[in-house]
Length: 122
Length: 111
Image (cartoon, rainbow over all chains, first blue to last red; front, side):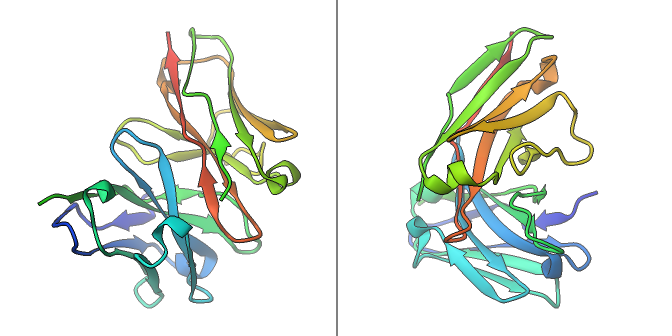
């Protein structure tokens, strides 16, 4: 069954910001880390950052430091990825995925959202 | 951050076995079995095939297997089928700084 449901496609102007949501099922945010990955057209997968909702701690890829903010709302089971200073090169499909951390951390992504296309164009 | 190197493409005929390699450059890549492999069909989200180097999640076909030798991890697809035509990505989670890195991806073509 679908376990990660992302928000719909976005079209943004250069210089603006976009916020993509990722709603999880059940108590996923207590048992998983949420990771954000993007994929530019005809390109590979690129890790952006992660949040450990249980601790409220996030870390980011160096490339996106200062431009990306990942948050989580445990009350609604929803994670968010906010990317600012958009440029055309940020046009991509953005995915959320979850990494099991209970009872122990398992270093892989066992479920992915359906992806959100963000188009940056003037 | 480290880089993971994969061949751009691999091909094989139905029924054959093929192997996709993934070479890492850091000491922890060679020291820890934290490589996972993902299959991605066009327009779809990736799906995990292998984790911790050689473990298969429930529901993944036994035709997919993983291994590692030194700084190179490998994904083998046995009994190649038309539906195996897809892009395949290796991935490594760095324990030290909690970063994640993906390989560049390998396009598998079934001839």
